[in-house]
Length: 165
Image (cartoon, rainbow, N blue to C red; front, side, top):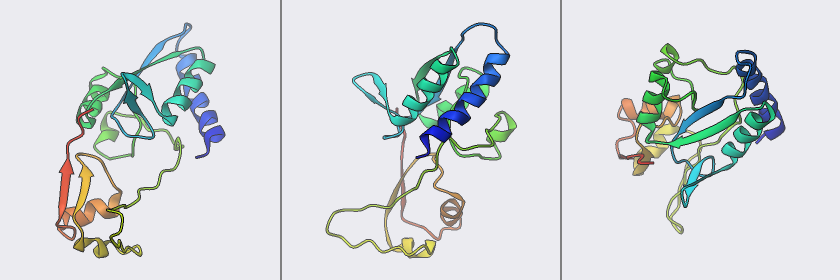
């Protein structure tokens, strides 16, 4: 994680908010439970993404409210203006109602993992995954290549679990 770089990017973006407002404002961040980035523990919002966001907002004189929702509702809240922002991958359908930062908050890697003791083989060719049953989170993107393989039925054994934050 490039946290100093990410913090600078966030502060820059938040300066825009500050220029459009003479007073401290509270901004609502809508998100879903996605450890270790953001998650709830005993009704307390935790996670390193939230630490970065809170620090950036505090440095610009603003406060942050975090609202946990299922991902589909996160998108609706942003689209309808009930939340000020969320984080996530760019998607053309969202570009109709949302502005995207030119700079990523941080880079993430999507990893495969399975039951300990079983061999999981993947060299980068998406078709190799067709022999596995894969669980995903409903309405989350796992990258263009993975998403296309699901649409093309290259990956047939996909179970999509609901995100019920």
